[in-house]
Amino acid sequence: MTTNVRTFLREFSVFKARARKGDTVRIRDKEGEYLFTAVGERHTILGAARGKIVFHDDLTKPTLADKAWQPSL
Image (cartoon, rainbow, N blue to C red; front, side, top):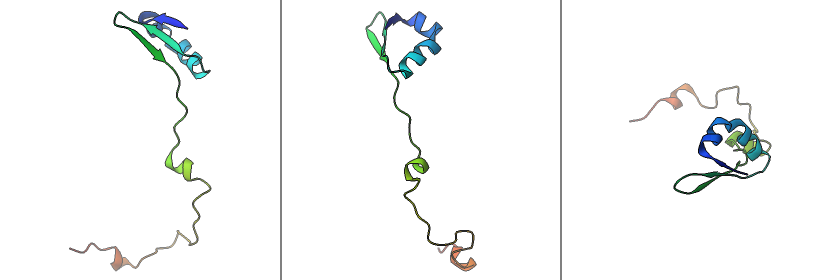
């Protein structure tokens, strides 16, 4: 689909929905032509690690004594 900048800005939600469906929108300008496409979802670190990190200890109890947490200079 090809459009100009003014129409692209006015109907951005329409073009965004088309890009999400896999279409490529071409935006014509005086200097040239731009492509608007959707990119896949970003995955968070937690989402990427889900099911791969295993905890073998109880993390609700302290793991170090109070003095071990003191900074050493």
